[in-house]
Image (cartoon, rainbow, N blue to C red; front, side, top):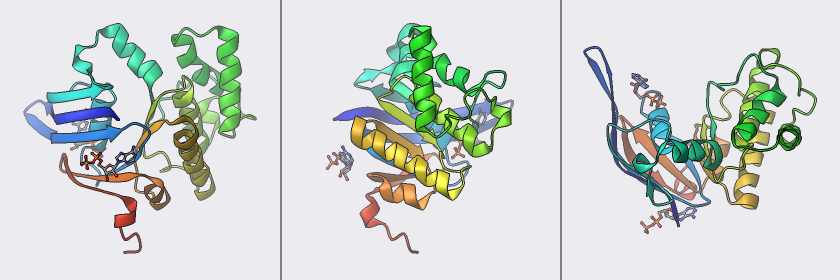
Length: 234
Ligand code: ADP
Ligand code: ADP
């Protein structure tokens, strides 16, 4: 059962006379309910690939299908629905709203999705408790540590019960203990709710937990393997 398919995705950024070929023909299949890790050096195109398969930016050429629908064919409302309901994004830079409390940051996507205000707030409290921030509901992002901000970002990504979670280095700014809790949380989402998880990571524990590992280099997918095929000791 295929949830996302990317076909010959290319992305070229043009800044003045400088062109960067961030993706040079990436073709990939993501299965429903799998936990896919994406590895690759800095600048290899991981974030660009996330933006393309998550419907956040348009490829220069190539196609992205989500549940068999070519997302280039979606109208603005359908695209908004995809971004708000179907996919949860955990960005490296958090993208939290600095003037809002944790609770407000997490409530916002549910309000956008049309949920009643009280229900949205109740659910936000529940999710923030789940990620261990029940005592920080009224704090603003600047009043939290990096790891706590990351957890707010994760809570926000989960607000609308997405079927797909795209996570860009979700454990990079977390201490070891919080990082392990994060992996537990992602694994539970996969196991208990069947959420498809796609994560860029170098975290060995995350790599070992994933169903498949995909390597990207210079904008191309160069290898796909099962964790059991990898020697993690070298
Ligand atoms: P094939 O090329 O043999 O048709 P698939 O494209 O179905 O294989 O799958 C490619 C890889 O993805 C295989 O290693 C398979 O074990 C793995 N895979 C397939 N489905 C899932 C899934 N639902 N969850 C995790 N891994 C999967
Ligand atoms: P990664 O996530 O693997 O670090 P990125 O997808 O962020 O890689 O970047 C791939 C290449 O595209 C890099 O050379 C980067 O500098 C370039 N790039 C990424 N985003 C932009 C952008 N918005 N404008 C111009 N160049 C970009």
